[in-house]
Length: 264
Length: 175
Image 1 (cartoon, chains in turn green, cyan):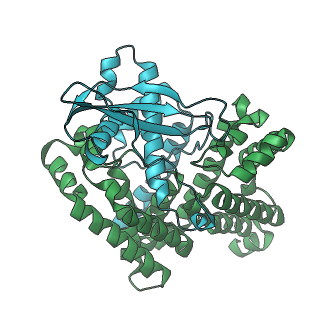
Image 2: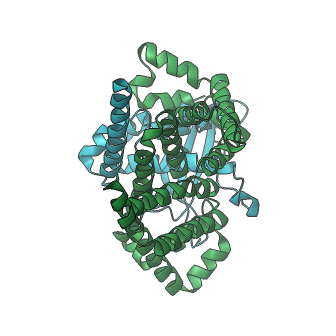
Image 3: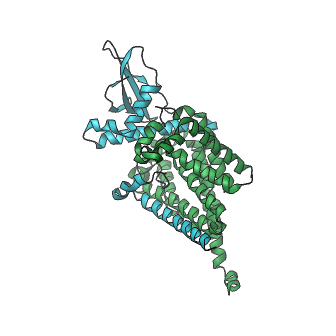
């Protein structure tokens, strides 16, 4: 889990450094505008401290820290607890800088490393952390599916075709296919809605079905990475899958007759 | 030992509260959105991607300058719109931040412009200020430009039966 999540934060941080001009004063993700969204960022000693952290040299150092800590975790360096904390804290601090430009992969990464940090400090909480990841993952798919299910454009396939028509997330070949074959768009959309809404059932499904569902999820994110270029979504969401599998297995072991006999 | 147990219990409850807050947030109830401003660390995730109203067109930002003589330049592209992507972007995609930031700003501005009766009040919104800062400070202005104005447009993606449609036009701002 840690390695997959580290790939997500490593790629994300390097991408931010590659487009460092975005954080310059007046640019699209500047702190000068970002700080205006809360008085906590502006007023008093706390505001001054946060502003110093968000100033450009310090912010780039923060990104550098995130790169270093992510790479160290990938290479299985020692001091795992401190490295996880570094990635968690820098992930949260990074997204504080601006309300614009972030996505679900960033949210999942911050959440993942926060949980992993606690699991390092308090190993007895590993089951709680695994459960938290499992439920957040299920919630993410359920919320996304439910929001699509109530939208007529999604049920008809028009939304899917529309998204692929954009330069931001689209792919011309996929768009042409969906436009020429609206049945594919309609039933493809409905399949995505059904899969997302039913994902939480993996928590109670038999292991073979659960693993098929997880493989389906990985395939879904892989296709999204290839066609919509949502590259970090693949790594940040895939990172939570081992936690979900571990949570379900632990539940099954607790419920198994042999474990009940041992407890007696 | 007792302290450690208390700390562990606190964290355990914290995760439960975090999950509960995340669940409530997904319902997007108006009363709940009011408390979103307390989430200064941005810890409560929003998982509704592309739904219920996904983007089915791209945003464009154009601007023009007013010269000292009173003449206006032609509208020019402010840049940082979506650029063509290849297979490499499935792994390495640094441009997505700029694209997403512009999309967030543009959609926020479009929403604010639609919801506000007082057009001047839109100037005080974060998306407006972000776009104004960008246009004023990071695009090339004509020599002798005294003021600038920007316009937000949206198109219909690859389906282009017509030109991009204006969504919002700013006031003139002194450079």
